Length: 355
Image (cartoon, rainbow, N blue to C red):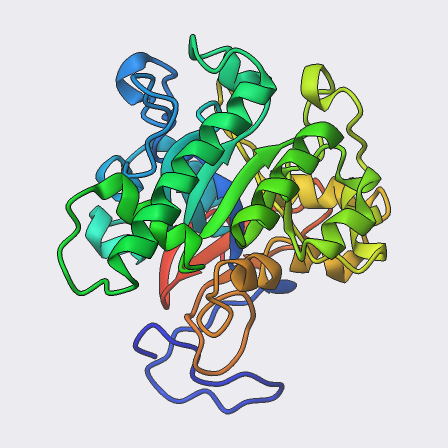
């Protein structure tokens, strides 16, 4: 009712005027913990690839809300596969590529689908940065450049105090100051143990709220991740092993969970068509490789909701939460099962099975 879940339970009396949908399984709407859908478009041509601005490797002031395209074909594609919420935005390859955003995948203009206009600051440590920019040329230079910008923001913050009521004169400094004050999380893409440790040291030095994205070798750094209180968004389980992901394992999510580290699963970014993965399938493979069944479901529902600070609004089927639901004709993690109906904010947005 009014876009919210009004009641939950067994043998409920359904009031008159309500439409009934039947399914073998109903889950919360899926949350893609990290995506570039809506900025990295389906056609894979320059005009629909807005995830990385190549004029500078450090641009925290870039807003995803100004680039997100709710009408991109990939938005409807992931919605048809049960994704009702996307954490998307500026992507891999820049030291600081910009801000991320949380949106619903329902039809509508950007301002109508936005849940959180600024979620995190997207950063990258690793070889993809050096592949896009002349400088930094190596990993030491990457960290030096990041530290330089954060020190500038830190110094400016000390000089001006924490009064944010005045208009910002420097968008870059303002955004980095939000990072330093803990108002925004540092979403750092890092895959090798070396790069993950660099991210941990950086977060420790500047007291950043750290989210490791990708984390192909996170399973090697359990104690270090716990000590840093880092959250982890695991890149697609079926990603191709090579380069910085050479030592990835499909057991990564299961190992992290067993160690007591909350796991969210992302679709991430693909440089080739069709440009995105489906988190439902990735969670299923993680489940087949050591992540318990219910935890696999949590990795694409309530865990990313908590990661984004939206657990009171989305991520589970509870009274008062957004009516984001996915109806299946069988076990969601069985490949032959179909997503029959996708409901977002109480409205049917996708129907793929006969009722």
